Image (cartoon, rainbow, N blue to C red; front, side, top):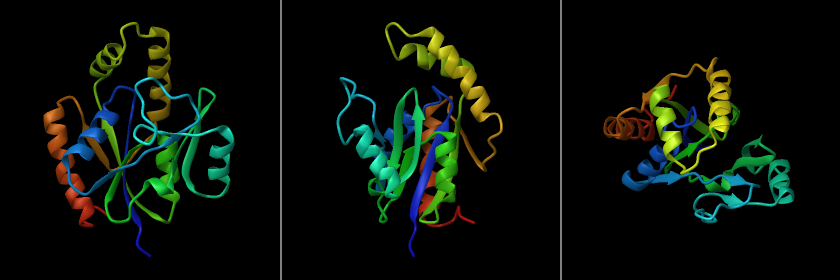
Length: 187
């Protein structure tokens, strides 16, 4: 059976995961950007089917129960997950996940997964997070920093890409994606 090829990007808040995914999808041919589902309300700037698939709690639960969701998690009373229908067998799929989501993907025998942790200095992460909004919630930023410290303390995967210089980061991703697509980075 042919497996879906998935590059699972993950990292602490502000590490640049979403920026990297968007760059990869826009600049590297034959890449499929994975679109996740959520039950949270759509933000003004978000587009259905581009940023997320926005589902009701009932629709989300149905996808989890019928096995069409690869992984699912709850965060701040909203659900997030990745539908199998968001993947392509003809392309390398690239998505952003949390550590628990990556673990679920690695256990799914329909997938060939390359987890890549995006690592960034705390100073760079903090500056990025503060610059996202005009009036950032500093208490929430601190909470996320401490949560990330706990969530990422015991993670040990083979691939790390350091993202303090986007130019070098993007070039490194081009090489990794090419090798993964050709089957050179698999066990």
